[in-house]
Length: 188
Image 1: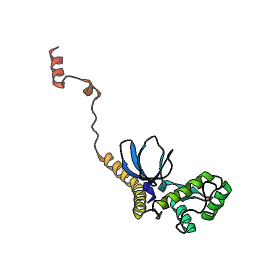
Image 2 (image 1 turned 135 degrees about the vertical axis):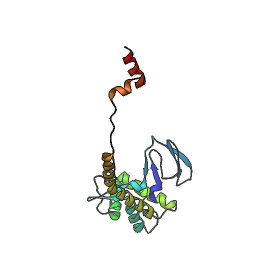
Image 3 (image 1 turned 30 degrees about the vertical axis):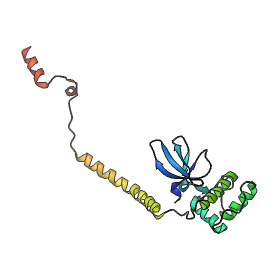
Image 4 (image 1 turned 45 degrees about the vertical axis):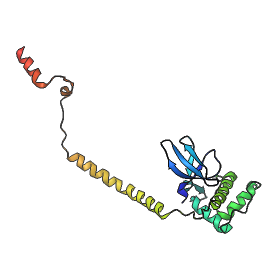
């Protein structure tokens, strides 16, 4: 579900992709349903591609949003984002994801994450888990990567078995047919 939800740099809120043009995307705001273009110069990020740093690995955003949803019992975040201090935001994040990397996850990132959670809830999006189709697509891509060396080996075998015909260098430079040049040399 989060693959179609986008964040556009320089614009507040979250957007759903509606259509795609040559050099732009048409996106619709989740809050007011207003459609706007997002050009190729804009930085557009899918929420499905975002992860949060932890001390061991990166946790996908959908897992963090599910943790917030479990803590808040499917209600908006209880913390007031406008007056929250950086220590308060870090303490809230520690409740959601205890091993988050405190050096690489900034308070602005936590504030943005919680505001995204509130926007998604207000838009009626409560299922943050990736769809089964997305999981299948990822598995298919992995299988294709594993099978690609086999295809290259087959192509190399078929190329090696083909005969190569060499063309003399002079044949491409002559503008006259070969028969006329042999007649001229006989006359001289």
